[in-house]
Every structure is written in C-alpha cells, then in structure tokens.
Length: 271
Image (cartoon, rainbow, N blue to C red; front, side):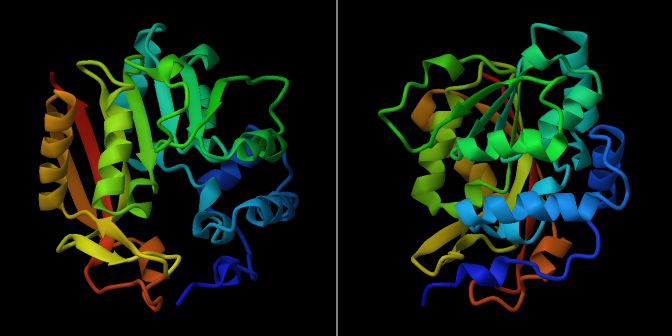
C-alpha cells in the first residue's frame, strides 16, 4: 500500500526548532512574529514540489551538522585552512551551509549538492541572504551514471550527509556511497546521520513501494568495508545509535519497527 503524501504535512505548527529560529532572527533579520508564517510559506512551496517527510514535518530547517560531536573539529579544520573544502550532500535548503558561514567558514569553501535545484533557489527566499552569500551548488542524482561528476571528484576535506542514505536498500546505498567516495581524498571525513535500526536490515520504505536498509552500528562497519573493497579505499568508522524525536513521532507508521532510531556517524578515509 502506497502512503499518501498529505500525512507528512504538519498542519498545526506553533513554533520551529529554537536554534533555527535564532538563525532566522539574527542572520536573516526576521522579527519573532514573522518566523513561523515565513517558514510555513516556504515549506508549502517546497512540499508542493517534493512532498518529503523532512519538508512536511518541518525538519528541513533544523541545523543537523552543528548538533554532531564531530562539528567542532570539522569547523576548526575548515576555518584553519582556507583551501579546505566542504560538501553538503543532500543539502536541501542549505541551512548547515549557512551555519558554517556564520561560524566563520568562507563562502568559496562551501559547496552544496542536491537532487532538487529549486530547493537551493528557495533557500535564498527562506534566509533572505542573496546579497551576502553565494556558494557553489550542483543539482545531481547520486545514482546518475551519465551526469558529469568531474567538478566534485577527489576534492573535499569535510563532507556532510544527513537523512539521505536510508532512502535506499543495501545496493542503492552502496551505489550512493561509491559515488560519495569519489568526492573524497585520503584524510577526508564524512559526518552525518541516517534512520537506522538496532538490529539492522531491510524494512518497508516510506513510500510503500519496496524496502530500505536501516543500518545498525554493526552493519555500518560491514557496509564501509564493502565500499572500501569496491573503491580501493579504506575507512575508519565511528558510530552512535540512539532513539530521537523524529523516529518517535513516526512510530505509528506502517514502515516503523520498535528497534529503529538514528545512527550518527563519522567516517574517515584513511587510505
């Protein structure tokens, strides 16, 4: 049974994440009363384009990267070396790119990659920052073998990947990770999180059209061993698995299972 996209549209929104609110007030210059109506206007435009849960449930404005334990080290790495480059994979509205910019990373160091180019366009409406920020952006599908990937290959020191891997099954994740590996070089670090499971395995996907693979800490280690074998690279994998609000709020869905949670990771290329 396929899922109706309307179920993802949160209709009673009283407020947004406090750190996102602070960013919109201090960086974008919105008054406190403007924030929620402004975000909802942009949200509805984005949801009409792609009715994804992260859009409908207001997670698209959350600052994911800065919430991870690895953020401080990544930020220092980028600020201390103007030649270091950052890639936000599945950047959506570029909120994490804006946070890095606010925290002192230069715009020329920041690159976004997303399937939907319209999200990048709408991001400048959301943050009202076109006059002060311009960063490199590429609209690509990680599974597209015919796309020109040369502008991204072997280029990035720090990469960010949140709420993306889990949309695919094991084979789909492998293909995406092999592409991502091509963007790295020895010493690169990939930081992010994904919907996971304490037991790991294939589970019904959100669309009701097949399965996705939810990584456990154990399967994620095996996953990057296989990525390494397929790309002639080696990776050091650190993970934290825990339940979070975004999984609890969806526990009544048909695709939910009692062991699901969020897998937070730091994957470093060592060779």
